[in-house]
Length: 485
Image (tube, rainbow, N blue to C red; front, side, top):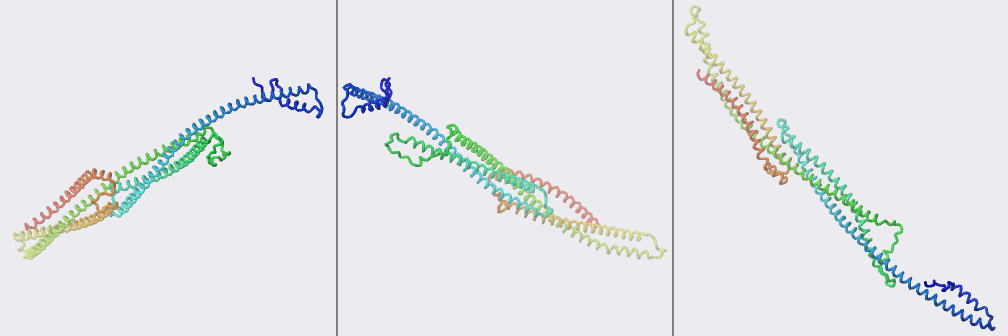
């Protein structure tokens, strides 16, 4: 075992030994003689002190060599541990940084998708508002129809149903826009957190890389910027677990909002598609009902016009018949007056000559026949007058009805063209889907509607024909009876 530093093999403290030998050198008097043993002892003591100094120096050199080797190994091990820890930390930080960059890109993309969805909602809201305006204008225009034409028909029901559908969809669009704004605000908050975390991760990478690049040789000048030498004495160090968990919490929160936003966009797109399909179907049915109503009104107006012409023709024939009956009645008034005068004059004969002879009977029959014919003609003239009055009333009613039908037809055509059509025959300016639905269902609907209209017209015509045949039969009978006399 080597001696400890500053001690001899016998454990004598060399510092104390130096003080004793140096103090003993000055015991002799200057200028005097010393004893031989003192002289010899002095040399022996000095040789012992030199040997002790040699051993002490050798011990010191051996201890220094061992300390240097141990120190070099410790420093090398520490540097290796630090470098390994830095490399591990850089790898972890780089992984988290990449995850943050990927998640941030997804958040930015999702925000863009939400803004695009919001724009689509605003466009749909604008189109719906425009259709609500057209619907309101149609209801307002249709309210100006004549009282005779104010019916709760299929067109009115479709307009009211479309009004409710469009209003409901407009409310849903507004709620969806508000929900999208809320979702965008939440994603913007998530984006700010991710960007802050990403900035910190980038700065941490830069700092750790700078730490890793610091040279071990103190003679080599370091190129580290003074900005790295800031002190963060106010920051509380985190544990590795809390450091990773903080980023993981940000990522988990971001993924939660991303999934929620994706569900919201999917629900909105699904709602838009369903609402558009319902809206197109409703628009197609409304267009079918409007066109069917215009066609029905036009056909009914034509039937009314035809019937009015027939009534006017019958009026003309009835007036001609009235003139003939009046002429026949006037023609019978002279013979009747003559026969009555003859009978009255003949009854002025003397009482002796008053007999019911053949002349008397013939005159009586003639008077009775002429009176009966005159009464029949008078009754027929009165009946014809009554029928002419009824025909006049029917013509007036038909004329009023035709006027109302013309006004209703004008209003219905104007209402149809409120959506931007140039004429009634033009297709509605809607999407291709509504055209397809309208084209497929319109022919069948129009055919069925036309069949119902024709059946109603035939029933009305049959009743009118029966009434006219009865009137003509009565007129023919009256004319035939008049011609016999």
